[in-house]
Length: 353
Image (cartoon, rainbow, N blue to C red; front, side, top):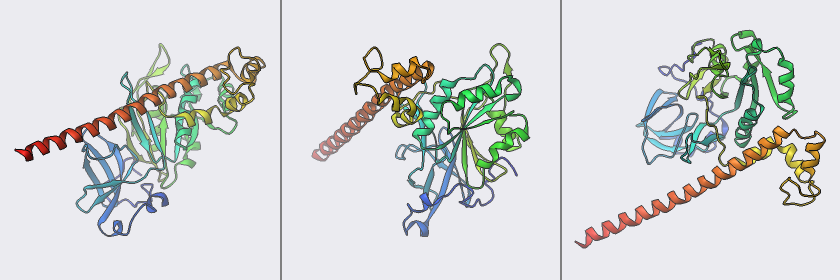
């Protein structure tokens, strides 16, 4: 089966990931003069949609809600935008750079493969960061440790990841070996949507190509000076997997920062938060306060210092970015109100002439 969605042929909605969640949002009118489509690529000025009638190109306009790859939309018979269906899940982050703005990554994902290589790029704190995002979206996560063929302590590193959460699903693979990658195929059945997340150079594109049995993504070699791969994926788009599922590959996220992710951080570090509840004081800062359960757990090795420091770091980050984004939304609301007032006044003055 081709790795690309053949948009010249009708594609059943169930293969595109249609589920009862979306069906329940439809009205009687929707069944008469509407069509339903899923965004499979996001370009600068238009969205590319897949539907039962084939490919649809939808121009991006300011009066549309913010949308992303994975979204389901309702169109009229002229293929004009009507509305966005409520999402089952949404991944977003603070946009890269100094400007505080929320960037949508993908939506309506069933499973996220969090990819981390077993070479010099192995990083537990980064895995925790991706887990916070995934837990916030309430999406199933599978940790995929790549480049197992280049690592001589695979089991040790696997156990380090498992220690983050005994319930975590973890797979170790050689991305170039189809037999090794086959362990991921059970998550890729008909109508399921999977996404890959991971920083640049961890072998996502190679893994995608092997899973797709194609060259869906370009790949780059390894830089010998730091064992990092070259960043090769530059856009988000969907592809069909031989098992019938849909695969969304995202660009490497060089500046992944959390935004409005308090629940995700809390779930990712639930072990720490349970211990924190045992502190003598409810407002304990976990420093030199008497009766601090966290300091006691650090001293006896129940909590790893790296993990606690990362927990505090991510809490501060999401609080800072979340507050700034909330302020930005409030400012945007005020600006919109001001613009409407100015426009209304302008119209009134014109009528007066």
